Amino acid sequence: MPRFFVDIPCEVGKPAAITGDDARHIAKSLRMKPGDSLELCDGQGMDYRCVIDSLQENAVELQVLSCCPNHTEPHTFVTLIQSLPKADKMDFVMQKAVEMGVSQIVPMLSARCVSRPDAKSAAKKRERWQKIAIEAAKQCGRGILPEVAPITDFRQAVQDASARGKILFFYEGGGAPLRELISAQTQHLSIFIGPEGGFAPEEVEFARCLGAKTVTLGPRILRTETAPIAALAAVMLLTHNLE
Image 1: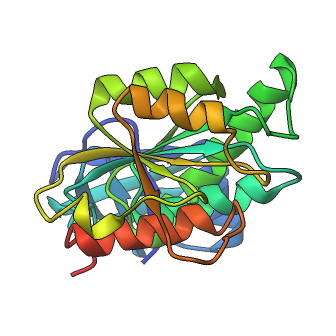
Image 2 (image 1 turned 180 degrees about the vertical axis):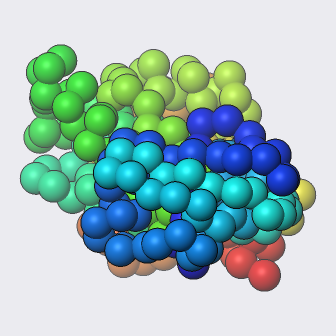
């Protein structure tokens, strides 16, 4: 069933509406018609089953038939802090991280990042990445819209993560096995992934001083776009969010 996000909660038995690009997609691409069913999500964990009353080019009128809590969200809030990779690899990371259940993504400039967009380019990239995250959330049935934060520098990212709680610093230089640091009771954590050249030694030391735990994903060196997906899969398994 097609799925769309709305900005405000719906009410069963009351009308609802979809406008803009989503309305055009319903009418022109999906070729839906009155009487067809679709699903809305308020981005706060509630799903609504609806039926189409009428369609226009820029607006779709709906009737809300029923609602229920979304069942796809993990109980562990995971923030992915990803060093900027080269080219368009971040598009892949955004899409797959959302599919794996990430709650927030923070693009980060670390010492060995090759990609260093200026302010105007960074704003455009963030807008693009948020759109990718939204489309991925629709596709995989998420109950929230994961936020893509503005690009931030390494030290600020570590300080912000330290204020939130547990930090897992995935480091090619080795560290503790992941299973020793998290469990099914883990509620919130931040995971750091380095760029193509890895983290600089001084960055690792800075993170450790603020309480980060260096973690390994095994003896193989993973690409920067592979590591976050592997890390998220392992985190979701060990926190019992893949059951």
